[in-house]
Length: 115
Length: 118
Image: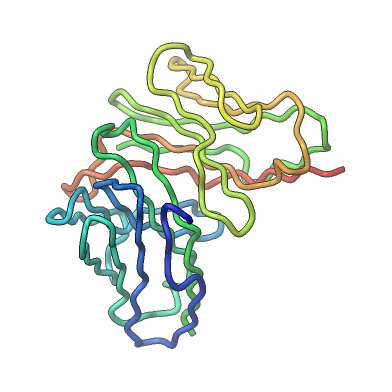
């Protein structure tokens, strides 16, 4: 089984709808991240969490919110989806012990289309 | 602020030819450098990383990268590519990064698409 899973893998929604993307991990890592990938722009950090009680905004947090329900689960919500949030979304995890030396482990991604 | 520049957005190359994917970074603090690879329809996975010590780093699938502090570069190389190396490659830097007062982690370049042709 995959260490980092994301659901759904693909989602089509309409402008103004609220949607949630979910991420689960079995690696036992404390740190979890949400990124979005746009063609030609690379990956940009939306939110990150260093433990269940620690949530931090990343580079592009506007229009998004997150919830760390447990060490293994980190959800990303779009409160009112808009077309420019159409992107590929990745969840990632890393080990707290390594700090900035850490390798990040990525899920397979969720492809979101906002009409 | 730290940043990463990948100088080529696309690199076409023939099978068995050598390849170099270029990455330059800027930082006022010590950094750790990474190369990640994304195969079609998959998530990213670590190819190699430089933390300290030898400036030549070897990774998976025959790739290697050289850290050059004076030129602030971390170019990725492979002496002979295969069709299966077709993917997008991301250079990333890790350090103490602030986003409006918060502390972040990895900063990614915009990616280089390597296309290996027979």
